[in-house]
Length: 94
Image (cartoon, rainbow, N blue to C red; front, side, top):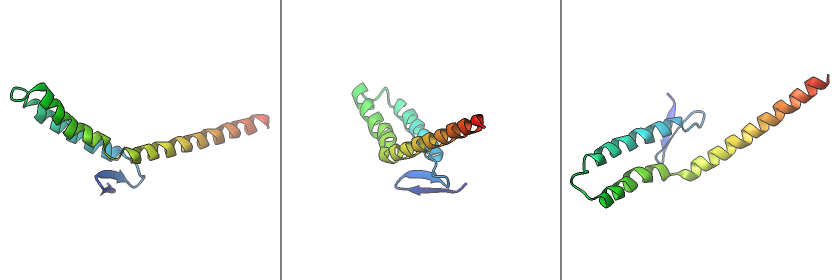
């Protein structure tokens, strides 16, 4: 599979983030499982700090990249749907 990792973000040839999402999910579950093992040894507050530092930091990293990507997808969808609508209108008037 053609993938590239740049600044911790994994993308494929189509600039798709499915690989990145899969990697982040695996990593988050791994850390969550290990944090759960510490339940008897640490306070709830300390466990929450670990969750924030290991899991939320990975989820929040590079949100700007995802925001730009989703905006591009919305524009593409809008353009495609308007083209489809205009094609339908022109074919129905024939």
